[in-house]
Length: 455
Ligand code: BES
Ligand code: MN
Ligand code: MN
Image 1 (tube, rainbow, N blue to C red):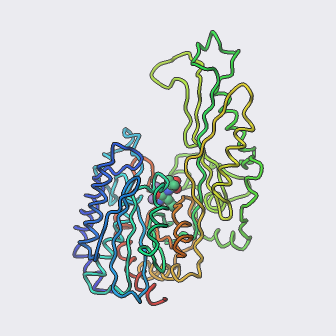
Image 2: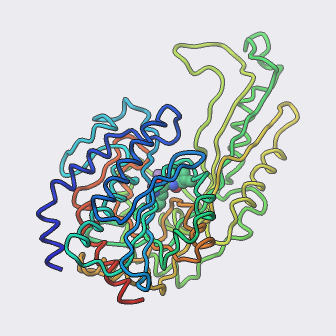
Image 3: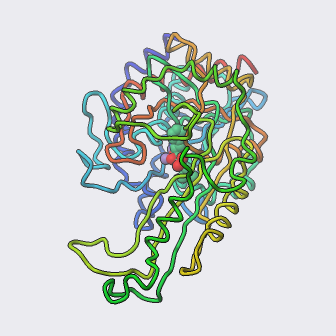
């Protein structure tokens, strides 16, 4: 569509400047000190949606950070697309590893460096600008609703309640999300699945107080040693998870599916070089893409205890802690796996320590059927602007609300991510290529057009 292209070309710099402004707001959902920034960010998103052409935009307060809802209803008998995204970001620490301030967006080599540039402000904003393009060129063919939340990065603790109590408001024919990655601009792909999550925390207590490690060491169990041993026992020599029953519900992919997945180009050497590792690691019998796509995993996300300050302190600590999460694949259930993890941790704890394991948050895995209208529309949209059909792949990350939308609204979710795996999500120097940002804005209007045509 030439009119779309012309409009976007003319407004390109403004689109970027608006995104940069949004990236300057430190909307870190995990920290209470950013409560006001969260509201400021929500207000700004609401304002942008109105400017883009929404009939109404509202900030819904929740028990946590607010949800921004907006809509443009052209005709109730036309199909409705619900766009979901999040304006909250992960904490930027460690700050010293950033080459420029996390909330001082800086463009280097055609890439925007800032926390949230890719996850998810940059990708969410593509939808606002695609919507604006459709409005300003009088070519919106369907109804659009936006649900932009502020708690995705902390597990969406209040979104379920918002969705269940606003089913009519959110009613749609499909949910469209850009909060994931593609292989590259040369090799477009669409995520047809995301993993679920079960996240727990473990506290190991030894003696009732910190002790002199010379006076007591050797006679009393050190909780760090015990925790380290327990953790080390969770994988065997083939890097299989040892927890009995962990794999019971895993839906195994057929050989045919695995063959199809193996067609996605993957350069192991480049992958290793990018990460600075000499060897990869993972479950025996599976390729790298399978290990992050169709297999469940168990990761240590944090471990601490004892003295970690400057210099040396000879202490035998009273406590040690770990944060542990499992990524889940279709058919595994988040609650069930969390319970399995917690019970197993208790079971393997020796009598010389007390162990407390508690649940953080979780979410179910999700699969998008490639024969759904939404997937077909996304594939056709990609083909229109990339000149190539996208490869369906499984994403390793999690967006727990996907399964919630399907359950509560009865709507399929399509994941049209424009980020790259190498965009440093949740890491220092998060980035988003300008080329991906603009390609997203160019592609999304086609999704709406094709979804309407296929409906
Ligand atoms: N956008 C990510 C999820 C993602 C990243 C999906 C890359 C596919 C590819 C999202 O913001 C995220 O980080 N989710 C969390 C889960 C959440 C419950 C904290 C995750 O995957 O760790
Ligand atoms: Mn995200
Ligand atoms: Mn994230």
